[in-house]
Image: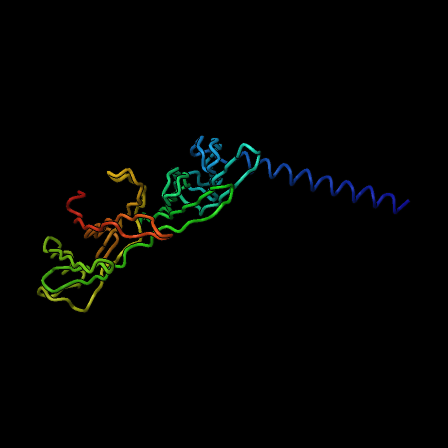
Length: 253
């Protein structure tokens, strides 16, 4: 009799756990939000797939997504899920960036915070094979403050050097002890940020490339000195620098 009671209790316990787990899974699924939806051929079979960019917000912070993912349903009833990092915002674009004739999945995730850094992802699902493709690395940029309230940066990939006149910030820099009578108190580098944005753009030739923007700051995150823009073209299984240019922060005000 005791054995029968134990079996009944065990069965009831398992049923309770299963019910709780199922309810929890349903609850988590219900919390997901659809950011954007698409109907497009990303496998190369000539038939559109159903693509959704989804996120799961924190319960106490709806503006931040603790989980972000791309959900893809194909015509043969296969399901693909591409997990991304958490962030405050996310976007998805379907463009052929690796020049193979099939649209790729390019996604941005904004991490939030004052730095405004984005995380970038590129995937292909050609021939029903999910594969992550690399995205360009930010430009290598050497930077220093110079005597006379100036700054200098050199882009490693091009070898070009750019000078900036920062006399309009003289009082600010003197107050913080960066300069004394126009001379640096000690060698100081600028801050070269990662991509603030990276997005697909179309060339006049019709080819799709990626355009990145990096922000150069001085002694504080709000002390923007310049923006470095670069365009990247995919070829020979790698990203190649197509062009690089620099604009000062004054043009952005």
